[in-house]
Image (tube, rainbow, N blue to C red):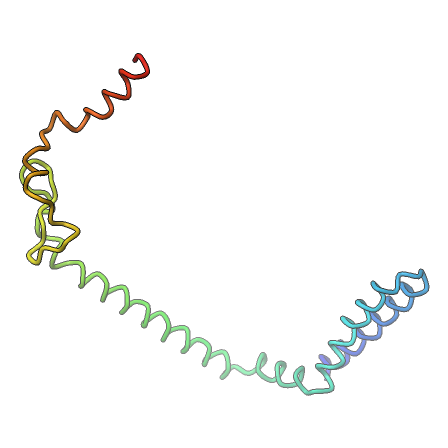
Length: 140
């Protein structure tokens, strides 16, 4: 009952502001204010305000929201644990082989497998040859 009275008063005040704005010849703004001020009375007439106030003041509804929140937290915890378990078996194996290059996994893929010639030709000193050439080009 109180919520309906407050919404009706808000609508009446909004329509009053719209009338004053229209009197000042700002018709577009007055129309927009009138549209906004009719929303609360529309919600009262459709019964939405009564429904929302009935939900907001019932303890059983808040307990239901708490149970839904707990279910969500449990669901997200199991998802995080599932991701950690999927990573854990491969995490114990060393990721770098001899020479600091990554070893291919037990099932080599096209991305991790490199040609033998490129691996043999790449020496530790050759990594900076491109950088040295750029620096020499600029006189550094």
